[in-house]
Image 1 (cartoon, rainbow, N blue to C red):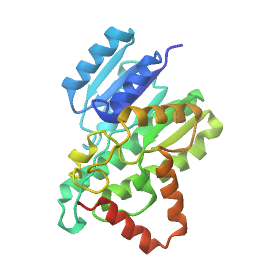
Image 2: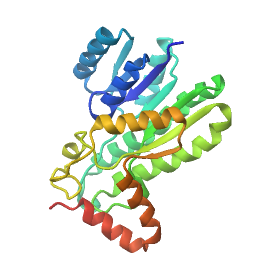
Image 3: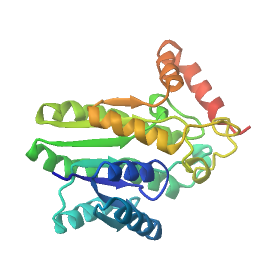
Image 4: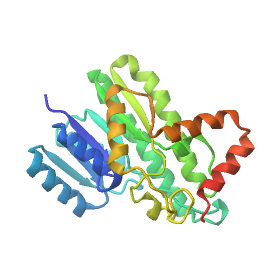
Length: 259
């Protein structure tokens, strides 16, 4: 039986690669992004090449009730979602007290509220069927506080802990929840977040979006609760457990400061 994956932030980066991976495995797709032109280009390409069905929804998930509107549209189309992938997210760089509240508010709405609402809506259907998988894209940023990106790091900590908690609740109902935690990745995130010149990104050879997407896909299919991409990232987050909190915060700031 053909399955369907709903992927947010599907027009670029990790979301785009996840769409290609699911399509190559014969899954139909519901692709969500603000960029309708890119979604339609991707739809035409995948349908022509892989003979699958792709339904696109152009929506800004930083707007209140956007998750419910998408859910209602999916139900109207009589589409059953087997894989929910909450990939859409934004970040911003700078001291919290100097930043724009509108940017912070949009980030919380997109990274936290819409993601949570999507899980609430689609998880109920999955639990009824006793089948389904969710992948929420968190970050290694979720394992520590992040000066100069305070709100972003905090939203990813929420995604990580929320995913682990609900995954525990629904495991016995045949549903799995995976928190994918990439490190710095070639995805375009650094430019939109204003981090192109940060120590994390500048001059670094980073894993590709495709590498991270493949890792996340296999982790989700195995039902893994937390999937940290890259051995160095796994080493770093485990080392932080044995370091004083004040030093963890200091190191986190150093890694995101601009060179």
